[in-house]
Image (cartoon, rainbow, N blue to C red; front, side, top):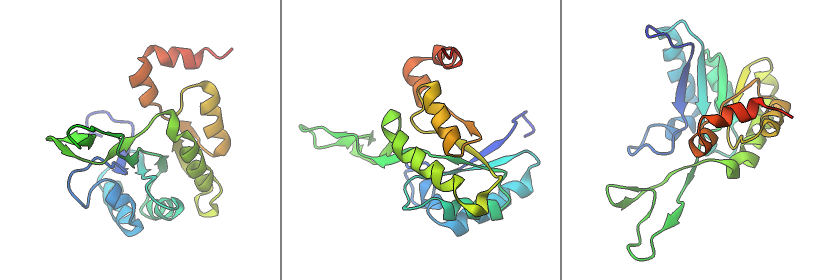
Amino acid sequence: EENGADAIELNFSCPNMADGGLGSDIGQVPELVERFTRAAKKACGIPVLAKLTPNVAEMSSAAEAAKRGGADGIAAINTIKSVTNVNIHTYISSPAVHGKSAVGGYSGNAVKPIALRMIAELGWTDELKGMHISGMGGIETWKDAMEFILMGSTSIQITTAVMQYGYRFIDDLKDVT
């Protein structure tokens, strides 16, 4: 906030945390989502979004907990816990951390159907009516973005497509024809 941030996004969703009890481990326990959201809201005056993990059977419990903790909005979804491949010569999976198999986050267009389902769940949850929902997960075209808005997102975020196609991608999104 002191450095000019417009909002804070709390990471209750990252599957890449090496130690237990961090990232998506927190996002799977609504009581922890509520507690940490409340602490963040108490410590700052700018909007706070709780970025929730898709590595759950349903997302609305954690979203409702974030709202009780004072979140101004929900960001969903983050990456999905995955092993993307296994080296058949070394038997080490990807991602690898320090030469050892690890579980990491998978994103991009393949997660879009999962993201849309979870955004719809949040949008259809009565207890979350009127809450800001920032949707993400596989958005590569303006039509993808519109689908997220139709399911309940009030804003969208795009990262993987920018990493994949470069910043020019944003201009392509704005050039709706």
